Image (cartoon, rainbow, N blue to C red; front, side, top):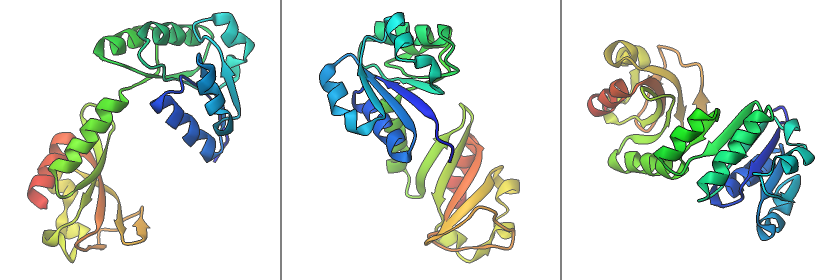
Length: 219
């Protein structure tokens, strides 16, 4: 894995978690927050921890923000600071700016000023949990777009000891089996002759409506 340079601005629950995870993976991370207490808290979880006002262009330039591959703006409830920080980062030439949005209005403004990726962590977590709770077979899913997803589905007794060719998921449901997990084994190049057992986890990509139909009828 190539080491990258990240900066995380805003060390609340979301930003702090991102900072710790990136640092633990082995990337270089500059942690930034307006609060000196927050900065001190993340000294051991970052390459550099700096206290500054991210809405001050000169301060961003002085800490070398232009040297970073990606910047994550995870400022909490201060939408104005989030928007101004994002605008400054794009004007300074940062290639990829990922921003946490508070609401739909915030999202629209971030789109207008050129944020590259906009995330709604609370909404996305709630959506994921709701889907998981409402299904006995859905383990997890990733939204690729408004129309397409990747889903992890738990094979039931209806699929037991049947081959992928026999199940014919692509023709019947429009989904593509990318991989499957059986106990400790992961097969990322499944063959049509591979047998699926009850409890096997299928990793399937497709249109959301097709995946829902597959989940409701095939399982």
